[in-house]
Amino acid sequence: MRRLPFPDGLFDTVVCADNSLPHRLTEQDVHAALAETRRVLRPAGLLLVSTPTTTCCAIALLLLMARAGE
Image (cartoon, rainbow, N blue to C red):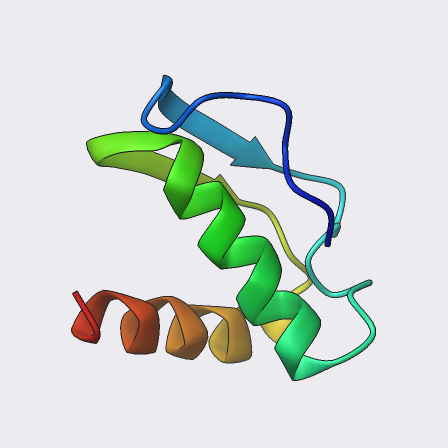
């Protein structure tokens, strides 16, 4: 995951649609994508993720783990 070309905390909402997270190659890539998304979200910003049903639980678990690390 490359760095997004936006300053920290710029967005109120980020939309991750069309199954983009499941196409990350490794768990580390998913973590990097979520960390970069979190960086560009303002505090208490909203991340909307659209995934196939089969990967929804895995993504939700990763999001919860990331949130627990705050």
